Image (cartoon, rainbow, N blue to C red; front, side):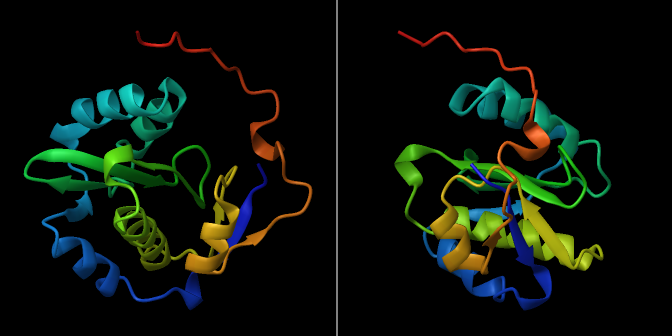
Length: 163
């Protein structure tokens, strides 16, 4: 999967995306340090140990560079920036039962707006999975020749499937 580039100075407003998910009782907000263990365990269980490792780095940033989507004290999704590399968005994920409800978009925009407020003009979406989604939602463009890019030679451990 290629990396993608986003112009942060042309982002859509954040508030409409947040309001959309608020109407269904979902709060998108910056994670807090005492939630670190909960978020990391959830990311590892729902996605991968590698993503949990990237997410762990986001808790060492000031401010924390992890946003979470929460409904009635239940974690539904997460997104991070400035984790694996500075100026990069991701990883991000929403629990499968809650996809398609705008949560991922709210998390994406929350992170990208935070990056803009922190002085970035551009963001890289590393190994962008749904490239058409990122192009449509935030105007991301593919960086030619970027796959596997920065992830070249990375160590991977295969997970055993849960029965």
